[in-house]
Amino acid sequence: MARMNPHVARILRPIRDRLLDTRWAVRRRVDRFRYPYNRGLILGDRNLRWRVPGWETADRMYADYTMDLNSSPLWPIPDDSFSLVYSSHMFEHLSNAAISKALSQAHRVMESAGVIRLVFPDFDEVLEAYRRGDREWHSMRRPVQGRQDYWAALDVLISKGLAKAEHRELHNRVASWVVSYGGLPIGPIIDKAVVDRVADGSMPREEFFQFCRSKADPAMRPGGHKNGLYFDKIERLLSGAGFVAVEKLSYRQSSVPIFNTPEFDFEMHKGYSLYVEAVKPPSIT
Image (cartoon, rainbow, N blue to C red; front, side):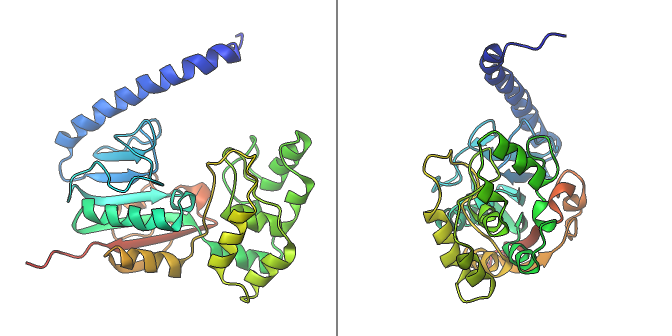
């Protein structure tokens, strides 16, 4: 079968996506009545990918609630709307200020005793693998350029002129976990001595994250990672937003049964992710 002309495909793809989005948006509205006691909110995912009955989505486009989580100060969602909130590999795309606002809004739209579960790359593990010189660990991430192995995919990008040979150096791989570019799993080229300092503890992690952001190439398309996360940091941010019982868990380990199903924690993320849950405390009357 002949392949569709790429220019035609570029025109038709948004139309297809919009039709699919409308289809799933209608199904979500029906689900509100079919599953009134199983309402949850997915942050940073779209109707094109998310199909769990009773759950709704929030993202920049093609979602039940259309909003930019990096800049929306007030979500278009009523108070006490959801008993559960889930987000996987989205918070590392937000600034610290945006994370604080997002968690505050999540707290507002959740019911009392509701549970929030967050999944994101664990920067503590990133550093530990760097200290070991473990290139195999750093090859983990979702498939890139049709290849599961990060380094093999990177070679393809280098051959196409989309990445530099320096990106193969392990310290620059560390930087790419903090800052990456839209559509490409690479980040800024930085000095190894800086990574060594954050690895040995002589440079605060937040200072390192800011340094990586300052070295981002302005010519590259934004949309990738812009932050580093670790348990102490997310615990502080969750507590600041009003959550309690912040707990570090593991892949598909939760007291909430639905969070232990394949629709939530993805297997391809489990090798390098941190899983955290917290609770919105009951209202005091």
